[in-house]
Structures are given as C-alpha cells and as structure tokens.
Length: 296
Image (cartoon, rainbow, N blue to C red; front, side, top):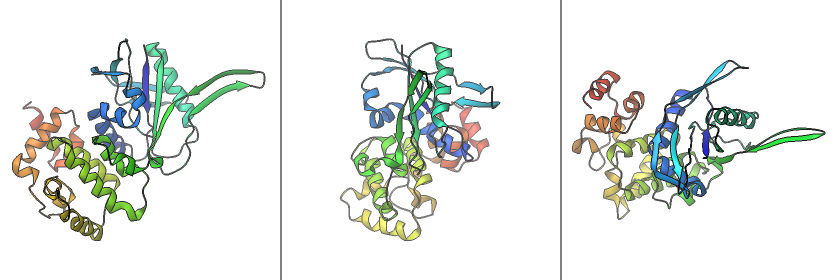
C-alpha cells in the first residue's frame, strides 16, 4: 500500500489562494497528475478514486491546527494502494518547509501505516526549493527524507501550452513568463480552452483561476482582441466566458444566453464547488446559491 501527499501551507491570503487551488485540483485530479507528475499518473488506477473525509492535525508544539483539504483514495494499477493528496501549494518562501513536510509525512504514516509518496507544490517567485530533510549526528546518520516537488515558476509555459489539459491551462498563469509575454500567454490559454470539450461550469472555474493570477490592462486586452480576430478558430474562442463579459463587452455568444447563470451555478454545485467560489464566478449572492443547492 502506498500513500502520496501533496502539501501546501497557509498564507495571509489563505482563503482565496487555498480555495482556488483546492477547487482546481479536486475537479481535475487525474489531469493534474498527468501534466505534472506523469511518473505517478502512469501507475494510478483512476477508476478506483474516491474522496475521503478531510483530516485535521494539530501541531502540539506550535498549537496550530492544519487541515488536509483534499484527500483522495485510490489504487495503483494491479495493486492495493492508497494515495492521499493534500492540496495547498506553498505560495511564499519558508526555509523550514522541508521540516514541516517531514512532520506531515510522520502524521500521515502514523495514521495510515502505509508507504508515502510526498509531493510539494511551490507557486512563489523565489528560488528556494529544498526537497530533502536530513536528521543526523556527527557520529550517526538517522534518516534522509525526500519529497517530490513542482516549482511552477520554473516551468516553461510554452511547453504546457501544447497540451489539451485543463489544469495545465489554468496553471499557465503561475508559470514563468516575462511581462511582455502576458498577452501571448493568455492567447495560448484561450486556444487551449477552445480545443478542449469542457462544460461551461468547468470553463468558468479554469478561467476564474487564470484571471486571478494573470490580469491584462485595458491596452493589453485590446491587443489580445485584435489578435483573436485574426485566428481561424476565433469564433470558438469568442464563445468562451472570458473577462470581457465582466467588463460589459459583448464578445461572441455569452454562455449565460444558452445555459443561464443559475444553471451554471447548479452545474458547479454538482461538481462540488464551494458556495464562496460559485459566488465569485457567477456573481450570485450566497443565499441564492444555498437555495439552488437545496433543489439538487
């Protein structure tokens, strides 16, 4: 039996940052592993996946409570294997992070008594990326703990723009790109979304994530629009519920005309989206969303 953990730590902007990453990877768990950890993806039996209840651990020394937001149980192909994914990318440099990774590892192993494959996701600009924790004395080496890492800012966004992968599309916004490449990055993001057959609710989730981390100014938006008009598949791109809608610009066919904003909210509820996240994406108030949830 094997356990895999993906760990991220709280930040001052915990609620927003956590919710966005949690919703993205929870919805597209298989695609996340496929894009960024293919060596893990190759062995996982995704037909056996089921979410487990959230686990909460208390740091007895610091007195802090930490929550493992997403926990997936599944099997490796041809074997009995449990994979636990703790989803909260590390969004700021913390030099003691590798020690905390070992702490999480120890807590999980104590609970499940199974081998663990730990994974950490870094989403900050800094270069710090320690993936080993060592415990030793001058006279004895106790252990060396290693964990897998994904440092988004070190990834070349162009490599991932060729994939038909919704998580890769959303995370282009967190990868390494130059300021003058922003329009091009968003163009490639829109092309990716247009190529993939994704329902409107999931499109909005992916787009909402991307827009949070990569925003264009008015001039850049106009430049992007002119480039879109030159594309052969411009119509498909203009049907995507993109930020122009939010600014009152009517581009192509609005998803709301075809599906309706409440229908979009219902789809998101079915996918397990939180009320807070749905309110952010659809602009419905929370009471309306709660009423819609009762109809399911």
